[in-house]
Length: 512
Image 1 (cartoon, rainbow, N blue to C red):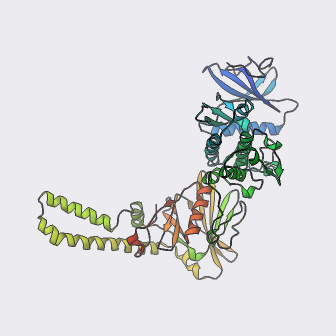
Image 2: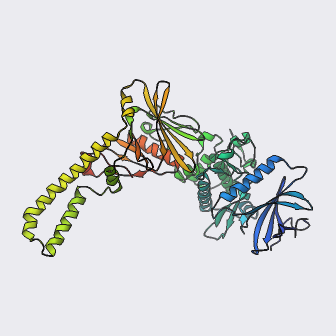
Image 3: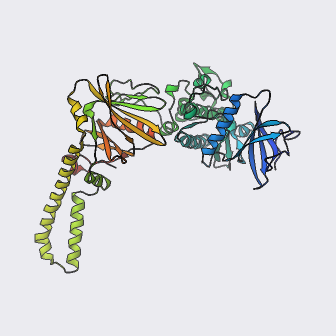
């Protein structure tokens, strides 16, 4: 095994824990915790052991974080994150405590590389940022989402670095981790210079990790600790020390904005604008939203409110429709959108050509009699499908919901909540101070597109209940809703387009 600084003279070296793990060297030390490189005597593979011993500086908060790290690692499965191997109580001559065993990644940290004089090009920084966003996106999509809370150069490893690539990126040290299940904690953890302002108050969100990513990039670009750089109203000033492009610099400044509401909310948000100038949308399509507040732009007809657990849409009654029973014909037609007039015509002609080829029917009969008949039948079949689909859909609209349209001051709300690994949607009817839950179901998929030349719609489909919610609005608002729902729910809307010949005759069948 390789020698590490701090190995010589360490009383833990050569100690064997659990009759299996032989400590080889010390990797790091924190108050109340020590990290060691060890050899698994059974597999003969190197492992990392984190040791928490009862000592005069031991606190129960240390134990809670240590136990939480073990619980979190056990639930993770990502190639760029150390793998959980074991967790047990220890009793050695130095005291009693607990040990967490995880896989060993033979790589160097960004901090070690920078201190050794390694310099990173803009392409290197972009690649590192992209890989970190990939890891964070995985963590945030878990149920509950996992927030690392201590992203910094020493917790990011690079392996297989070459002249053409910065290498493979790994994220380690989940000792400060927090999940939504532990959201009530007020523990202040993290590293000064890489912690956003809200984390000093014990509050952590996915945007807090993105701040750490940005500060890590600043450290690599400037070679200086972020806390040593000048600040202007809590904004770290760094671009005068680098030769980074304007677009990349602007993106890093976005990640490190001291205001939580001005930062990207998730890794997916950061990815959407990666290396793209963040232009203000046109006034007619502006949909500005505060992270824990409500849509403030008066041009939006559908206000949106977001909390830690719920995404809430306030939809005017005239813009929403609730389909309490999606008919089988509608499902088939939307599942197979190619069933239309050209499709029916093509299949029919192909069938009769085969009959002509094999001499079953004469060509003259096909050309003068059957071909016109096929055209007429195909057109009638297409019209019949449209009439049946539209009439069935109209009959399936919940009558109690539709009757509320004539009531004064009535509105609706659509609430999205994450429960048991699914997105649960509740449709509420609001009449004065009275709230009635019309429907609650697990969201299966979403789709969106043009219902007619100028009208757009967003479909929320619930396969378990065979029901659907339709939200109508202009194109800008539907696109905005699709992006917000994709970010919050993780479900990307399927986009469809109506063929030109159908735009003037019937709405698109949009059930995915």
